[in-house]
Image (tube, helix red, strand yellow):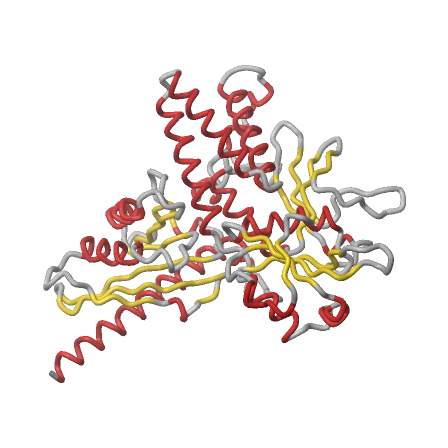
Length: 435
């Protein structure tokens, strides 16, 4: 408990407005002395969230809010760190008013199988006991599976895994097609090679790939246990060793992984402001997507649009429109570059997971160059040829081969970005005519 910084209710203004974990504590029984943690939560804004407990209490808050005499808090550098720290502290203190402990279905665990080609998934009930009530451990080992938890909020955990999967790609199924799947093209799956016949070979390429994959899963598990520094230090040692052996390509990959992991941990949005959220199947794929479109007539009255979809639904509060500064220059590539450069000059606009560009390979390449290694996947839709270009993939994917939900989302994004851009373009033309 000594890690928390404690205040009383009278000192709400001392609470930080940053992400982190907070606890509510009450005095122990008479004669015992000290305080007992009775509730632990995470927040994007600790001050705002704690105030809500007291000013707008839910039915669950009313069970314990009058017992609270002290408030503790711990700041974190990111929402992901807050999620992981919450899980570790719940395991440590076992606060009675979080979720009823005997009903373990309210908690979530990350499961990592321990077979030749491990997979990663989320489960409610990791393992049972003779009484049918599982023990709650931060990490548990069974014969075939390693479990990490408990995590309170499933939606936030899904988003966290989705981001971390970009740094440490993993399988979610014991079967894989012989060719690359959609997740492979998005850089989230290791690919079909580990499932080839020579998987059992103790040496050779398959053995090396298997060793690297399992090593990455160990790092993923450490991240989920709150050991980010240990993982980064391990990656830095690996990079140094590759450099020492003049394996500069491998060292470069590790360098990029370190950078991506740091960006993911610092900028990912995983905690919802609302108490209850619903996530569609499309939301499971892309938490936040930005789509861009350019509208002009021979370079005149050129505009750019940025539309934002969160969990598969448009969020118009995050839309942005750009009056392009290139004067009378009919150059869609240069216009797109200007819009993206202006967007990336605003890191306070939370970065998306995916950016969709209207255009082909040229538009894709300029977007990749402008983003400058930020952990954002760039995709580009060539509507004429009905193809999707994906960053890191040489050949485009026919739209008809995409899963239906991804196909529908991409078309909806592109249509909305075009509508928003041309609406602003027409407004500028009309204003010019009136002048």
